[in-house]
Length: 276
Image (cartoon, rainbow, N blue to C red):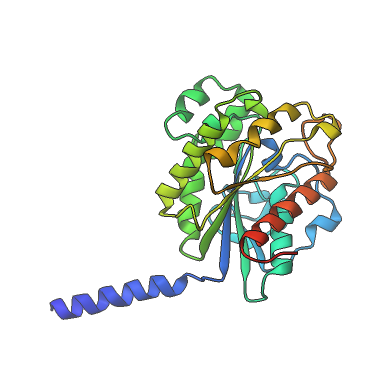
């Protein structure tokens, strides 16, 4: 009897392992409105290689998407009515330069206007209490716990593939906060712990905000973002220099997102030993 039980346990474990594809590279994306995607996507952005996919983090009936299911990575990649995001051209860049057998998947959980504290498991509840109503409405789509939703979707994704990196674009709402690198470290290390990941195999890529060359209203924060690798050794900062801004000088325009996303992709490829 015990032998039969052991046999079926091993059979079950084997079936779970076989469902995981080591050639399915998954990346977690989080942040505020620039990671959500503020610019409208255009016709050229709706053509995507089938090897690039998105795991839907919310139900989007208008798009025919269900939370927790994989779809071709046609924008929007965050919530149902968001725009073009760095994740779009990150994924396109990755599949364009990785072997044909490799697929790329992204999970994007972002909330416009939020501070990094929204993704801190120990602080998000008190942060939401004082958040404006428009932000609370966005947070509700993640059942009032964006971090929890990201982890939930990431664990689901781990049944299909392997998490290879974390993409962050956040900081506008923390402009001038010298403790931001330490706060990001808390979120990053908690993600690694909750998902059983190693920092050495899951680097953190953090993008600069709209730069001074584009009259970025929060460009001063880039000097703080630049210090992130001093606090998180496996962090890498993605330059926004030359990435075009939208009229508000807080967000990138579509061309800016394409360029910034491509830079995220080039950096990740470089870390994988693929130098363009």
